[in-house]
Length: 126
Image 1: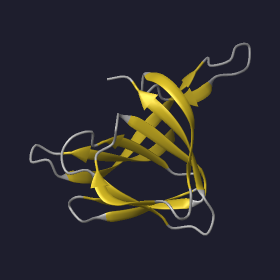
Image 2: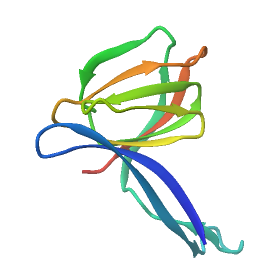
Image 3: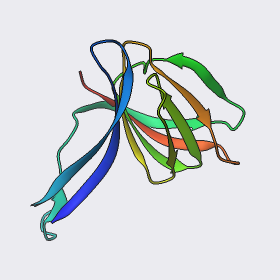
Image 4: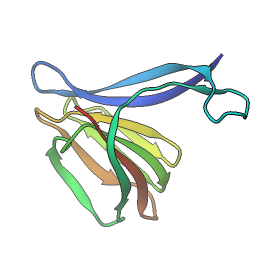
């Protein structure tokens, strides 16, 4: 059985943001026929995507909610997110973070690597 993991940042009914670890099963799908099936999990309808750079000197320490539901797939560098409940997590290259804290107190962000952080941002449908 193949699985994929990502972290979800969400807002509870009191406006506090929290992290949750999510694991999904990947099922065989005829993804690119006539090639053999690949393990896939259809997760998120998307509206657009692009690249985002977090320069090492960027300061996102003022708490803010995410501007939209979005998926960050980190390509380079590392950043740290602090949820409003006080929990902080670091996201190195290769990590995936689903932002769903579009309301409430939000989160703080800082770049923790010596190099800029570069992510693929996927804007998600509502």
